[in-house]
Length: 175
Image 1: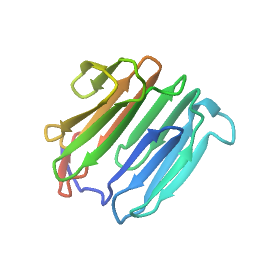
Image 2: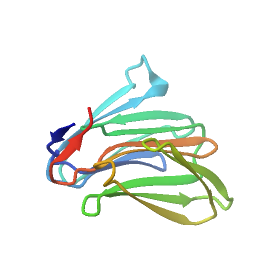
Image 3: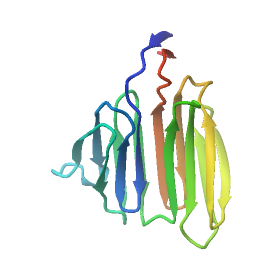
């Protein structure tokens, strides 16, 4: 184990409706790369963005059949994959002050949705039945020193969130 100096960044990337929404919550610009895995070997496979400080930008996506991977600094990864417009909206936001990530699940349909939430660090899988409402899950990251890796699945869609919440002090990296 070696000490790790936190990067001066805090940003969120989520899939909302037909857009990948990238929000920078700090003064430091952030570089992000979006890969459209369905367009491999075409000129539309790769998109590079610089997310300005305290700003939000979006990238329009084909929501009928999609497979996107977003890469940022310090292990930041988002993967969004599906075969139709989702009935579930999933938003992950980081909370530096409480050392948590907040996952908001919104059922956009009138049906009950069966979803799974997998913590890749613990291999724990939680099965949820979500009625026509919203649910918020708070996950504390103290035990993992700010690192997280979660996968959420519905019948036709998946969301994968990995990275590290920067606590604004030195942490320990496992190598």
